[in-house]
Length: 184
Image (cartoon, rainbow, N blue to C red; front, side, top):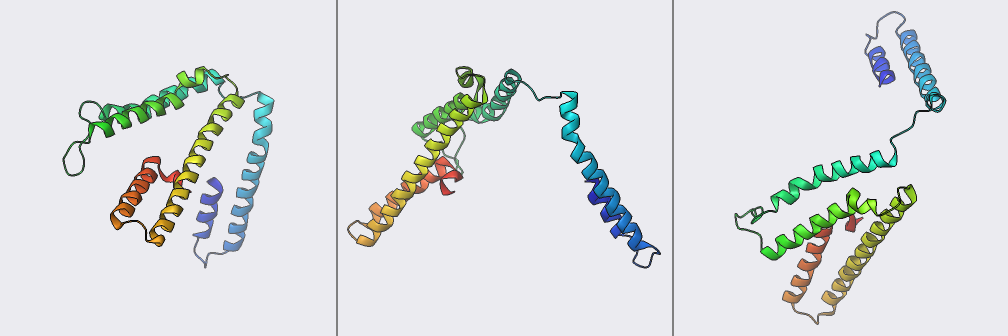
């Protein structure tokens, strides 16, 4: 940012200012030298001083705190009869229970309890994340396949408009439930 601010300040000098071009060149040179000099030597300085990031245990504890911070408000909102729909009515108890289980599943996937059963190394975490990605990709494949088949079914003319509309609504709901990653 310092280089950008310095250069912007130099560019904002009045055009009729004597030596304006030289001042802009000096500002550019100073910004370039300080950014490249400091930026280029920072990794060497970090290695020389032996500075390292937090260990796996610290990362796991931090992840557990973060998971609690981001999931507790949503799960708390599902307590009792849960939130109200935009029209003021209550959600169906089946839908609320599914949301509670989904929220608990999210906590289990992200929390240190789930990760405590894994090794504390990066490979185990990456393997777990890879499985989650594969599940998402498979779900995406199934939904896209179903959507393509629905288009074919609509074109065939063998199904009623009501049945096609219900199937489309169910697929749309699945896409919304799973989030935007199905549309990637």
